[in-house]
Length: 206
Image 1 (tube, rainbow, N blue to C red):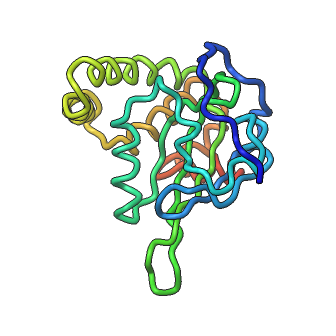
Image 2 (image 1 turned 135 degrees about the horizontal axis):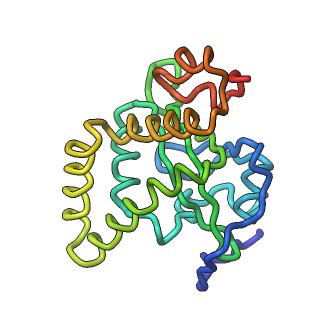
């Protein structure tokens, strides 16, 4: 049996090199145990499939990520809601990679939740520059005042400064970035960006 290496002790402030045109895909059960991962996941995380299948997905959680971001994520998924999140992940060698994730809920014929599918793509630098300061603030509050204080601040930030849920906030960041960089043609924007990021993950935006 192959034994995986533990999380790296040394964190390296360096982005891992991976093909950012690819979509990273993984499937987990309801507890977050990895059931499937594609080749792009291997390349970005620096783990192989044999090592990660059966392991908890949080093995790639970067210490720069505030816990409240994952709490909001899991609360939504447990309710059966699809969800978007911007995440900084940790690689096997201690490096990092940023992704935007589209989480969908997997259900059986009886409508019961059986697991979750995550599709991830690289995050534009403009989006990282906007969300990284928020994550740093949440993490500092968490370290000094505790997770509850961080959660309260996050909730107040979303209500007072964005007037949106976290999921809506993430979508809005991408809308703004795409408008600023003019990735899409003007006549496509209105229809493609209104309600979701499906165009981004499923490649129907070109």
